[in-house]
Image (tube, rainbow over all chains, first blue to last red):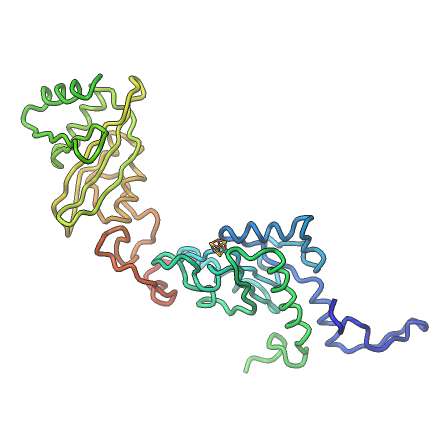
Length: 170
Length: 165
Ligand code: SF4
């Protein structure tokens, strides 16, 4: 819970409450962010662990890993991106509708990690714009949650007047 | 059948082939076969000496040659491994006959050797790269392969696209 989760102006006793469009819009988006089901290597095991009962990603409104990128708002790149897989990663990102966010999980997705080789992409930010980096090899589920809360903060800071996906292409 | 028996029966069948027995580097029974006689020797091994199982095909890059290594077992008879090796002194375009017509299981393994070491196999039914895409610059397991870090932008133009990508 964030501090600005408090309802701005309350008139609950008369069944009215006032808020801003930004607040209610971002509140809704923040608590129903659907990640694309997309694991590439060992980090994916921690991502799966994060969604099990012990760590319970559902507390953040994200229990629903989508198998189709067209239903997803968040791409968690969990694992080693090889050059052979890179076009598919980029394609999944291109298929996701706006608003969309990308989280690079683990040192492999951030920088290639231990794989300094011809076969491995040295950081997924070469092909997609990354919003949050979660370091670790692999990061624990708590670290993933910290990254996800950073994404939530980004969402809360956006305003419907200025976000790029409602603006005309300039 | 002991190793000596196998060798003497091979020598009887191919009196004109100079088999070399490698003893120092390996405990296994290792025969070096001239590359141009490989298919004949392999067919004989399968048909008359019961080596019905080719367990793997691999290759080594030495300063003066490439070497292709075959590991044979006999399911019928049991017993240990027979290692066949061929030496390919041509470092530019190494080429050897395929054993896929003899042991169909060699198909993918020869493609892997072709892909990563750049050794071509004559008479292979489907000689394409298996791990990397057509047009990838070089053969990564060769010693002279420059193992550098490619960027996505560099490799993207070499990659063939599926028709409706
Ligand atoms: S960062 Fe570590 S745990 Fe994660 S995919 Fe890479 S090697 Fe595996």
